[in-house]
Image 1 (tube, rainbow, N blue to C red):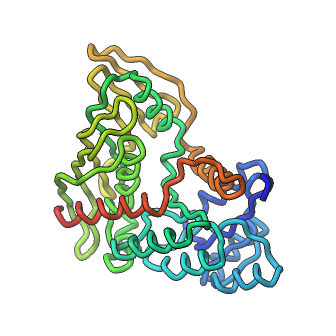
Image 2 (image 1 turned 90 degrees about the horizontal axis):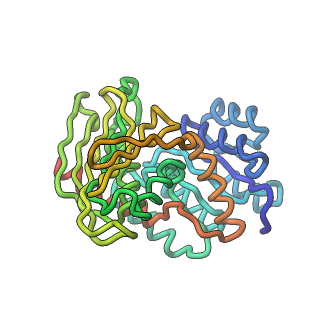
Length: 334
């Protein structure tokens, strides 16, 4: 299919679907939501009214409409809870419908392995995990600056994604059976993938989890990683990674890359500036585009990967499995 309007189905009309819908609206017609699937009538009708999409109560009903020629869909954006994705992904792959699936890949390692196996067998069907921070422009700029030698040899990766989310205490997000993990699986999976994206494959050296809510998942995770092999230029084997994740603490969304000749720092709450600091502490403030276009860039990259077979930074299902394996190890140690 030549480049043009890329038509997507939103599967799961919960909160995260709004980010993808907003990205489609910001794409200047490049991406269009043409279908929405959700078993809850009120939820699917809300999206249908907002976007003009056709509404379905099941994936099979949506795929049947496609097969009958009543609907044309180029890709599916899966926004369901991770515990119910296996059959959805299986159906989409069987119908040869490309997938962009929200993170984490799965709520348990076993399901992540099954998903990666499914995607590997369906080689001709593009399938990706929506690790959107790969598409934050400041993150890409920091990675490029490391490669150029701006901070010398990379020594340490530091990432904190944490805030206060008291409402999660009673939602499925903190239900061990439905979610499989809490703050670290939710926010820390982004951090694990960012380490993979910037540094490369990792192993977990240690972790400490905290549980504020009784009989619920962890509300804080502190994890230490080490890079397993040499990454790109100026990224040696053995780079340390420190990940801080939280659902019950003060807001912090920061990424720091520390080298032996300086450091780079980005605060998501100061979205248009990135700071380089030399060894003497002298700071340079670099103006950068905000991270808040990351869903847009990710969705357009999905369209380009499917329609044009473009080279992409999108995370594969194998990348999703790599993050799941690290998460399982950290949870066991924490």
